[in-house]
Amino acid sequence: MKAMSLSQVHVGRRLHAFYVLTKPRVNALIVFCAVIGMFLAVPDGLPDPLRVLAATVGIACVAGAAAAMNCLIEQQIDARMARTRGRPLPRGELHSFEALVFAGMLGGFGLSVLYEGVNPLTMWLTLATFVGYAVIYTLLLKPRTPQNIVIGGASGAMPPVLGWAAVSGEVSADALLLFLIIFAWTPPHFWSLALYRTADYARAGLPMLPVTHGSAFTRLSVLLYTLILFGVTLLPFATRMSSWLYLVAAVLLGGRFIHYAWRLWRDYSDALARRTFRFSIVYLSLLFAALLADHYLRL
Image (cartoon, rainbow, N blue to C red; front, side, top):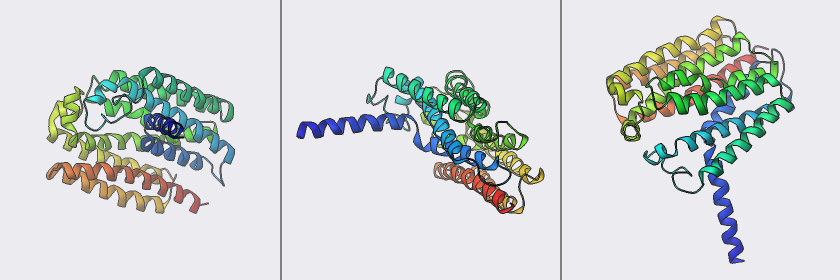
């Protein structure tokens, strides 16, 4: 019984290690934005629940596979950073080959679900997003340019487009507006993190903006991109994609984000940068939730 119990604990730890490889908290935000895209793509009523389920499972699996590939490629970098050294590969809980096979199986399953249960367009867009994150961003951009977050943000901004395509079978101008919001949100979100993790990134040899251009330049960039983001979030109202409910939410949330960014620029502290980073996640979630609420209250 004791040996059996120890074996069960070992299996449980390994399963948890594979789960951690998928970066579940990041994945949850990805899936949330994709699901919002699915519901917004339907002009009247609700999307087909089976299609929503299939698209959610497929997108979540491919996003998890991309995260696992990121962990595999960056395991040596992760080992040098306090924030990431506890991940399964640096700790030796999993081997590289296991992570590769896991990513391949999970991604392959997700793509097959999207192709068979949703539509080929969503499958191809999701595959392109996988390549954009796991290959173009992780391998090419992140170790080479401080603009990695700006350029690589295109793959991170795709989830609502994937959700929209899953339900409607096309990519409309409204879907591209959702893409643009996340694309503009990404730099201030990640640079807030990079500001209080600058020593980590420098130790790992990654050319993040605070490492290459300093704290003052990065803080100003956060403020400027937050102002750009504020303008972008008004576009759904300007194009009549949304009504007053969303506009009020966008202005209030955007004003709060600008307040954080202004304080970062004028009176920096690591604690404030950490709070700004955490607020940016809440900000995006509430903004998309407001867009969804606005959509159904107008029906």
